[in-house]
Image (cartoon, rainbow, N blue to C red; front, side, top):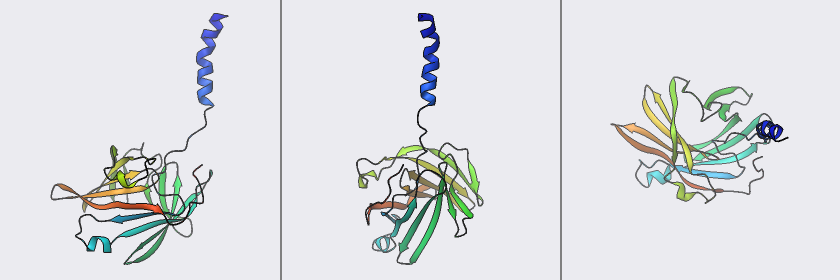
Length: 199
């Protein structure tokens, strides 16, 4: 009897692990309805920096299990307004048109566990994980560990830090051999109560 227990113990463990619920990959973009983010370019002097602030609000979100998972973002600044429709699938994010066709990929499938990729002539690669230095503006329950992605194009190099549930929180450009922050999340809140909770 003891020999049978020794033989079946590993099998039972593997069966138990196989029956664990599948967890969805983290969403490296804003998805909660009503979530409103404000961004500034720290390289600009005041009052220009505040005047050029960009606000991003999650206007609609359909993140229930199944496909498609769509999020509408409304962007607003002193220069005007724009709405974007994003499709989240397998950890990737794609910009889609009104007809549902993919216009561009912001992040590839299986992000951040992905090989380097190329999108519209720009080469991207995951650099690694890091804690965001600006995380003091986030609630204590927020995940401050993000993923840095480097982009190389004929125009130069850019690094972007993505956090789960927020997406881009900081971007840096290489200028004369120095990395300069050109976009940073400076405020986070809800303009109305979130309607959906992540499954």
